[in-house]
Image (cartoon, rainbow over all chains, first blue to last red; front, side):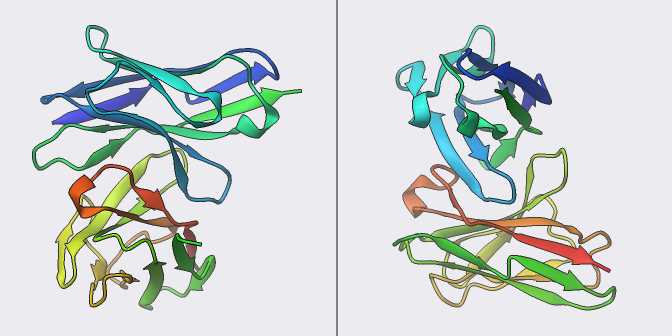
Length: 113
Length: 114
């Protein structure tokens, strides 16, 4: 079994300040973890993925995430927010075996000018 | 340009009617997926297909049907048996060797039942 919890439904930051979107997971297997971004009324775009290689993963648009097994976390960060980062972000886990993907409920990122 | 197209973008249906959502990809991907998204919720898997003429039920397949007659096409039919069909529907695809990984998503179809 696998599950994922995004700890904040909404996050608001000022443009130019750091972004932190939190994600905890559980999995019976060594997981693969993903962050996707969705702009309004659009499909999802893969930001980055962790698949048991380096624990610090760099993605597109300046985002990165760190896999911490001891904390079962995969938080998404960006040093400096841009207005174009305003969107919905989904943390996704793939545990293995016959399990598919499990999506978190999403975090709505708001960027204040 | 390679990608996934979904049509129509918006769809309105009367209760009791079946409706078919189109999904086409030119990425040469073997695997295709259908998800449903409701407000404030993550995506939930309806059906997926790893290869032509084969598909499996996902977590919420009741009231839906699919076909996979061609590699590039994976249409979804929302039947009258689906009790709450109003939602945003997303189609995705991936390379078969990367099942469940690196999914590429279409722009979605928003279905509203009147």
